[in-house]
Image (cartoon, rainbow, N blue to C red; front, top):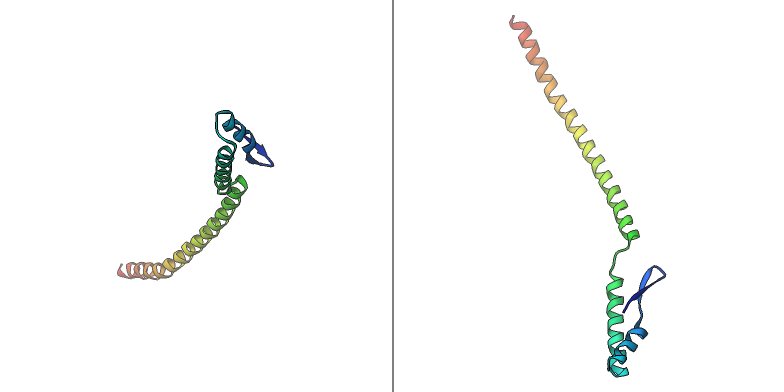
Length: 103
């Protein structure tokens, strides 16, 4: 049996499936029960699928979050560079002055 695409989703043709089961010797009640079970199972499976729109929205949110975190890290790196310069420059100045006066 084939599933048919309807309104962006896939629809299982239960009537056709039930008729096929009946043609193979199943009673109408048996074929109907099997068709309903398969249809419910497919609906459940389809409801848990992710769409392209879902993926795009998640990707956009992830990119925005990542961009924010990258900017935060860049800011922290800048602060560390400034702190390092605050500590290193005085030491370098002392070393240069000491070297100059030792001559």
